[in-house]
Length: 349
Image 1 (cartoon, rainbow, N blue to C red):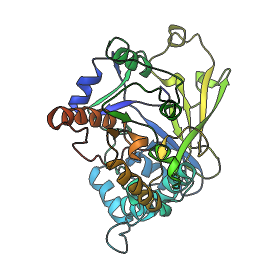
Image 2: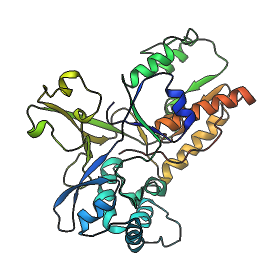
Image 3: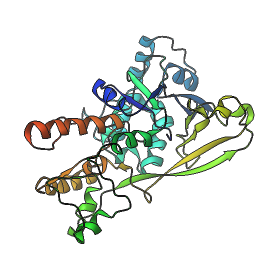
Image 4: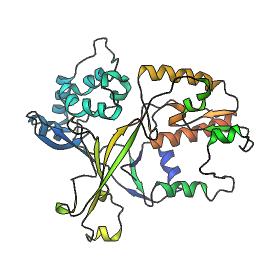
């Protein structure tokens, strides 16, 4: 699973994925080790809630109205009225106290860019909770696949006689050698800049993750940390978060019975040198992608689909709904095109 909870607000998506897996309800909660007003690190809910603000800044907020008033007093309006970059967006959403402690340096570690170097959309998605709800997501359907995400795709693909899978094949090498099967429509889900690499255009930026795993033999109380995911947004450590898998509800019997004393943790480091995960949203990349998108629009018999081909961050449920609706369009109009434009997904956490 990694730390990946499936969550969606779309009933169509939920009904679709239930065909391919049994699901275990699970509300994802994230904590952050964040310095308070005196510099002492506190373990607090992320995204910030009433408890977060009370713990970090010695407030006594006990209602949604008081929390909203605190936000209103903190927020800084952008000079032009609309935020022009990530920093202006964050300050307009949460104000300087939370921005500096929770979001500024975490963003730098994740993207290798400070918020002012990124599109406003990256930080405009910051949730501003006025409630005591400390779940990471508020969607009506939140769950983990009982036997993991791989089993979903096995159930989706392996029993369909219309689907053939070839692994360890370099698409570009096979295309050059004439080894691709005949097709009327190619659905390409790889990096769009790689597809056009022969044209000599600049490469788009992507970020990835590097995982450093450690097995802790006998942590006090059986766990290394108090939650499955603990973010480390301050600049004193190079990793972004620590994930402890033992907190997951789906565990072997020996773990559930308390017979396994040790625990596996993974520290996550952002990187630009591994498998591409996240498009980097800033003006220069957006402008470069538009050049690639113009080429793609003229490409006969090829549809560019997904996060890497669209140079856009999709949540899992957004990617599924996008695919379902594109297929709707194919049946209705003969064209494999999106029906809607999705806003930014959750992004790296």
